Length: 381
Ligand code: PHE
Image 1 (tube, helix red, strand yellow):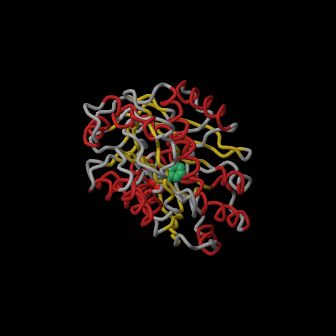
Image 2 (cartoon, protein in one colour):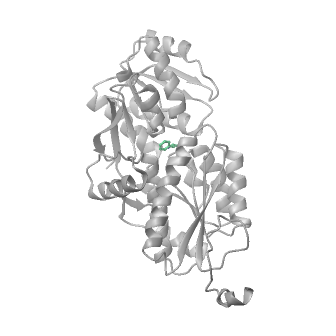
Image 3 (tube, rainbow, N blue to C red):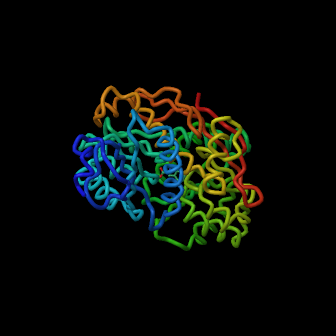
C-alpha cells in the first residue's frame, strides 16, 4: 500500500493531510501556522470569535489555491485563558509542530507572555486584538493588526470631552490586568491634558465579583461619566450592580474589551446608551468591511464580532506577507510582515509601522436596544 504513495517522498504529498495534528508528519506541501487562543476558561468568547474569523480566512485563501501554490493549515491550540499556558502552547507549536508563523492572542497579558517565547525562537507572531503597548515591545518578531491603547485611551478621552461634553470623570478598572490598568492610565493622562477632572478612581482584582461598594463611592463623587476599560465578563456584573445602585448605563464609556455578544445579551438593557472604542462594527460603511460581513454571514448565519474581523485580518495579512516574502523561512515572512502597507482589511486599511503596530482608525460603537451600533470613526491624525 505504501508504494502507492511514492510522490510523498518527493515532497509532493498524497492523500488527505488535514488530520488535525495527529498521526504522521504532514508533507511539506502545506504551510503550517499556529494559532493559540482562549478556547476555554474566563474569556472563551474572545477565542471562539477569533477562531471563526481565522477559519474563514483560511477557507478563502485555500479556495484560491493557497499561498505560493501551497495550502495553508492552521493548528489551533487552547491556552485556557491563561498566560503560562499560552507560553507553553506556543513553545509546543514551534518545537513539535514546526509552524512558520503564529497568530494570537486576544488578551494582552497572554500575547505578551507568549510573544516573548515566539520572539526568542525567531518565529513571527501577529496578535489580532491585543492593544497594550508592551506586547510588540518584546522584540522584532512580534506584530499586531490592531491599534494600541495609548491611541485608544487618547481617543476615548477626547470623545468624552468633545462629543459628550463631560468633564468630571470616574475610573473603574482591574488593577491586576495589563490591558485594563494600562488603558485606564492612558485615558487618565489624556483627560488631565484636556483639563478634565478625575473625581473618583476605583480599581478591583480580576477575581472580584461584587462591585457595589466601588459603585456607591463613585456615585457619591458625582461624575458625569464613568470610564470602565474592563473585559465583558467583568462589565456584565458591573452594569447590573450599577443599575441596582441607581447609575444609568449611559454614564459608562469603555474600550474594546467590552466587545462580546455576552455583554448585550446579559446586560444590554443595563448598558443602554453606553459608548466604547472598538476595532470594527458589522454596520460600518466601508466596502471591504461589508464584503467581509457578507461572507461571514453566509458561513456562520450571524454577524461577525470585532474579534472575528480582527482574527480574519490577522490571518489574511499574514498570508499576504507569506506570498510576498523573499523566501519561505520564518525570518523572510517576518520581514514581509514588517513591510505591509495599506492592506485592505475587514476592519479598515492596515499599515504596519516601525514599532510593528497597526496604524488604523478607531470605531466608536454605541449600545442601543441591546445591539452594538456603529456611531463614528475617529483617527489619531
Ligand atoms: N484589546 C484587549 C487586550 O488587549 C483585547 C480585546 C480586543 C478584547 C477586542 C475584546 C475585543 O487585552
